[in-house]
Length: 247
Ligand SMILES: NC(=O)c1ccc[n+]([C@@H]2O[C@H](COP(=O)([O-])OP(=O)(O)OC[C@H]3O[C@@H](n4cnc5c(N)ncnc54)[C@H](OP(=O)(O)O)[C@@H]3O)[C@@H](O)[C@H]2O)c1
Image (tube, rainbow, N blue to C red; front, side, top):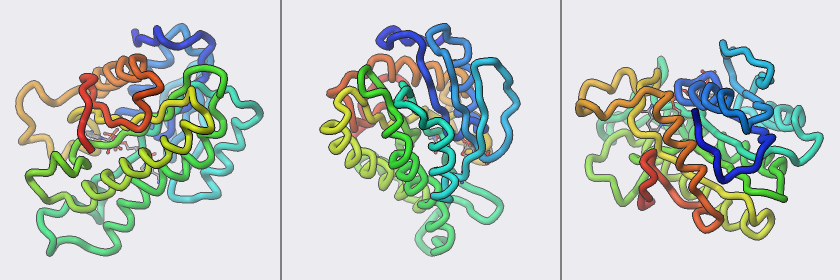
């Protein structure tokens, strides 16, 4: 069971990227939570969970019209309490994380930035106005510790790292504006840990024993983090264990 003690009841939750490993785990965790009344699940591909709480919609976060249409489907009133953005890319058939600068390609870095940084910005643009201004609300985006400039000791993974660093700055920027307009809204940047999913699958062999989480565990830990956040935490970067990460 998740833990949403700091929230009121009859919660409405939006998950963008509900077809992913961690997004799907958030969907299951919120579906099991009695305080959650409705879940709007957005994804590019179909999701396989059905529940009378869950409404599913299509979204392509690289396409602004698709993001606008998705937001309009739920924009009848400002009633959303929690938005989780669980989209992201590390690799696909044409893109692999770079080991050095000579492997970087303009098309790849643009694609990775488009999904990891610009996509969440578009979601923020059209979905944050749907949050309920009268009570605690959350706009949380999955980033990654490797996007921390301070923490970068290994180099490599240029497109992914830099897109997540850009994402972190975008969210920090948004948090300053949102604090003035919707003071009860908390903008949250989250690191889920290393999680067993399609995204991490090719890179799991060097993960120390005990450090590869199942997505259900990561989602439950992150819900606990979100539950503990207050307005002063807006724009900050937290890990799955509730510890602050330096940008
Ligand atoms: N797994 C890890 O170890 C780890 C570690 C640190 C941070 N993270 C971050 O956590 C987030 C989720 O990762 P994951 O492990 O759950 O990866 P995943 O299983 O590969 O899920 C990625 C999700 O992003 C969606 N997506 C990609 N491009 C999209 C687009 N243009 N429009 C709409 N949806 C799009 C995918 O949708 P479709 O499936 O429908 O294409 C999928 O739902 C990512 O931001 C990742 O960087 C993960």
